[in-house]
Length: 129
Image 1 (cartoon, rainbow, N blue to C red):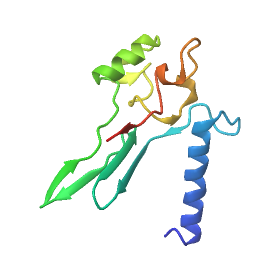
Image 2 (cartoon, rainbow, N blue to C red):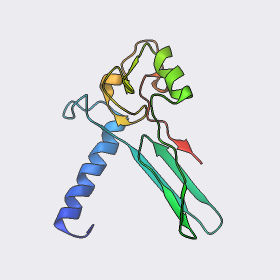
Image 3 (cartoon, one colour):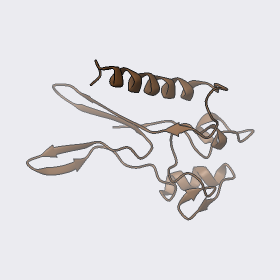
Image 4 (cartoon, one colour):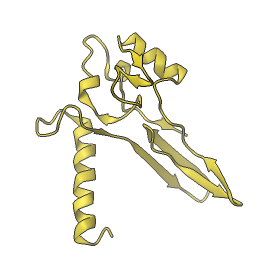
C-alpha cells in the first residue's frame, strides 16, 4: 500500500502530524492531535515507545501479551500531572475534552504558563520499555 498513491497520501498526513508535534504550525488546528506506538524488534530485544492510547501486543503461543499501556487521565501518575497543571478530569476526559493524557499536537492542552512541556496537562513524552 505504501507504494500506491493512496499510501503516499497517508504517509504525507502522518509526516505532517509528527512535524506538528515539534512546533506550532498555524496551518494545523490547535485542537488536532494523534497518538503513536512504535515497536523495534531486534534479535535480542523488543523495544516499545508509546504516547497515548495506541497499543502494541505480542502474540505468543496464541496469547496476546501487552507491550504498551494506555495513557488515560484516570491513571494515578497522569492524574497527578494533569491536576498539578490546573487541569480537571471530567467523565474520564481532560477538562471534559480528550479521553487520553498523552498525544502529539493537541496544543490547546499545552499552554499552561510556568509549566515545562512535560508538566502540561497533555504531554507527548512516550513510555519506553
